[in-house]
Length: 286
Image 1 (cartoon, rainbow, N blue to C red):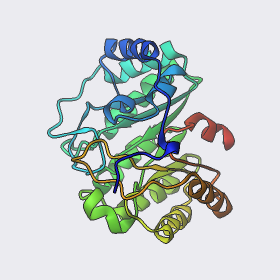
Image 2 (cartoon, rainbow, N blue to C red):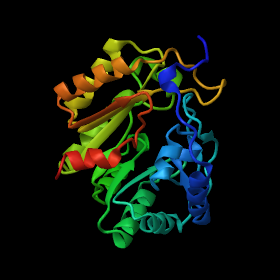
Image 3 (tube, rainbow, N blue to C red):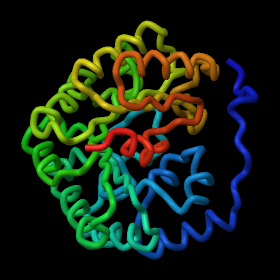
Image 4 (cartoon, rainbow, N blue to C red):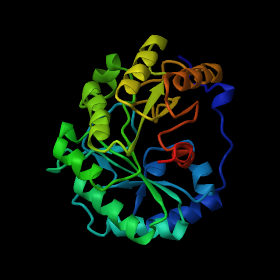
């Protein structure tokens, strides 16, 4: 298909000065953001509001998902100062809602669960008013690792299923759709007060009914929040875009999700996992 983006996929060029200011803060604390590492199209918008999604445990992922721009390879040793550096950044930015994610670290005994907990605890100490959302990997299905994160009581646990089961072998070869569903189910069984969230990319070749089925299965595991956004290939070497989903179709998914019972559905071409994350939390008080 043509690589030319349709009109609704064109964004204004962000202010380079704003990006530079945020980059100085992030680099000064030796931090990474998924905004930068995953080449998020919303980087300028988020940075202009002085917010970012922190990427912990380095910027090299041990998995080989074909859609993702993050570098693949062997992870480095964890930085013991990173949890406190994230907390310092949260404090400096005066964030009311914090999103922390990570690369997948299958090389670590607990997949990095303890590092997530240390980061949550550090944020709690320096910014007790902030709500915390963690976007976690599947920890290879480890209940112990998941329980470690849940026991630290973040307000939101996010775990993306990313795409429909049929495409997993090509798009997420080291992941497992049912393992991801079970993770979301288990979070609720461990602590029903934690809000759960998941996300889907569209435009990879999935069928409408397949998306609807995934949405229905997410509701069966009591998933509260859902994000749906257009997949954009980071480079010609990545999984190709099969088509560009229209804004009208995104609106249909949003309406359908709301009828299914999701508390909040963010569905649109530029929606990503952290899109309007604070609004989602505010929409469903504990």
